[in-house]
Amino acid sequence: MLAKRQRPPAPQTDDRAKKEPRSNEVANSDEESRASSNPESDDIDLDAASRPKVKKAPAAKRKKGKAAQEDSNDVDLGAASRSMRGVARGRSKAVKTRKTTPSAKGKVAAAKQRAERLCEGTTPAWVEFEKSFFGKVAGEQILSAFNKRFPRLNYDELDMILPKPIPEAAYDEDWTVSNEAKLDKRLMVNPLRKDLIDYKDSALPKLFRVMIRIFRITPFDFLSPKYLLQYAGSPGNKSQRWTTTFSQHIYRLIVHPLWDFDMNLLKLAIQYAVILRTRDTRTWKFIAPNNEHFFQTFKKVIQEFKGQHRPLAELHGLVSKRLRERSIPTPPYSQFMSRLEKTVQVDNDIEEDVTDENGPLATYPVGNADLKNITDALDSMTHVGLPYFPSADVFCRYILAIRQGGSKEAGKGSSKAETKDDPPFGQQKTKEYIERALVAVRRFEAKEKNRKKRLRHIGEIEGEYSIVQAPDDLEMSVEAGLRAQQAADRDTVARLQRMNNKLRVENDRLKRRVSQGDDPIEPSSDTSSESISDSEKDPED
Image 1 (tube, rainbow, N blue to C red):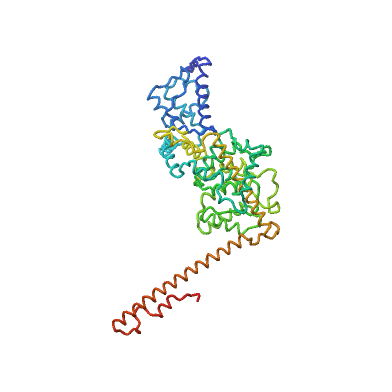
Image 2: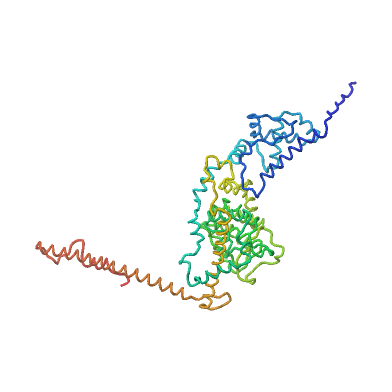
C-alpha cells in the first residue's frame, strides 16, 4: 500500500517580505483613487496610462521602458478578472503570487485599480468605448466646440451685462436716480458687505464666470425672485453668503446635456425639486421652456387644476397618461422628473401640504439637498437598464476643466489664450463684478417693490391686491390706438394716390383718342371708371 505523500513545508519568509509589496500596492492604489475621486479638483487626468508609476519595493521589479508602458496600457479585462479570482482565494495564495512573473503582477495591480468599477466587460465594443472615451478624450475638440458655441466674453461685453453706472434707459417712474444712490449707499454701509463680495475659495468665482458666459446672467441673478428662486442658506449665515458646497453643486449641473444649455430647463428642475421637498401644492407658476408636447400639456394640466392643491407629482402622472393616449413619446425630461420624485425626501419638519392658506408664493428656497437630489436623479436615469447619461461629474470635469486648461490633452497644440479662463481676472476685479451683480439683484427687487406700491395706489385692494387698469396701461392702450389710426390713415392716403394715378392714366388715354379722331366716350377694354372705383373701394366705406 502506497504511503501518503507528505506535503513539503511552505517556504519560510519573513513578515516584512510578505507584507511590504502588498502594503505598497494598497497605498499606491489608495493615492490614485483619492486623486481621481476628489470633487474639489477640476483637473482631468487623461494621461494616467502614460505617467510613470510610483516606485515600489526593490523585490517587485518591473519591466523598463517601452515594455513597461505596454504592460500598463494593456486592457485585457478577462485576464485581469482571472487574476482577481486568484487573489481572492486567501492569503496563502497571495504569498505564492509574489513569485509570479512581473507581467502577471502588473495585471493583478491593474485589476485592483478596476475593482471598484460598476461594470466591466470583455467585448471589443466595451473595451473600445473605455479606451476612446475615458482614455483618449479629444480635449481639443471639446474646447473648440465650447468656444464656438459660447464665445469668450471681453470686458466690454461684461460691462454691458453688469453696467456701472446703469444707462439712462434703466430709469423710469419706478426707479429714479435718487433710488440708485440710496441703493449704493446702503450696500456701502452694510457691515456684511465684505462677506458678500470677498470669496477666498475658487468655487463661487468659477461659477460666476461660467454662468455669465453660458447664460449671460450671474448666479445671484439666477437664484433671485426674477426666477422665483432664492438661496436658502442656513440660520447661522446672516450674510446669506453662498457656501463652497452650494456653488460646487450648481457648477456640476450647468453643462449637463439634459438642459442643452437652456437655463429655463435647469430653472424648472430646481423649482420642481424644492416643490417636492416642501410638499408645496400651490399652483406652480409654470412657464413652458419650449413648444414640446410634454411642456405644453403640462401647462394645460396646471391651468385645469389651478387652485385645487393637487400634488405636482400627480399632475405629472396625468400629463404622461395623456401623452400615451395620444401615442406621443414622453421625453427624457419626464423620466428625470419621475426619478426626482423617487429621490426627494420630504423635510422632517413638514407635516402637511403647503397651500394658499400659507400665503402667496414668493420664491422657492434652494438648498444643498435640492441640488444633490437633482444630480442623483440625473445619474439614475436609464435606457433599457443602461445609464442614460454618464454621471454629471463626467460632463462637468471633461468640459469645464478642459476649458480652464485642466487637461493635458486639451493643452496639446493649443495656445495659452485658448485655455485661459474668462474675465474677470484677479481677486480685485472679481470682487468688483460680484458687487455689481449683487447690486443688480437688489435693484430688481427694490424696483418691483416700487412698482407694486404704485399700482396699489391706483388699483383696488382686494385680498392679494386685484389690480384694475392702471394709468400706464391706459396710456399704452391709447398709444396703441393712435398707432393703429395712423396706420389706417397711411393706408387711406396710399389708396387715394393709387386712384389718382389710375385716373391720370385714363385721362391721358382719352386725350390720345381725341387727337386721333376716335370717340373719347368709348372706354378701353381693360380699364373703366367702374373698375377703378370698384377696385379702390374701401370695404369700411
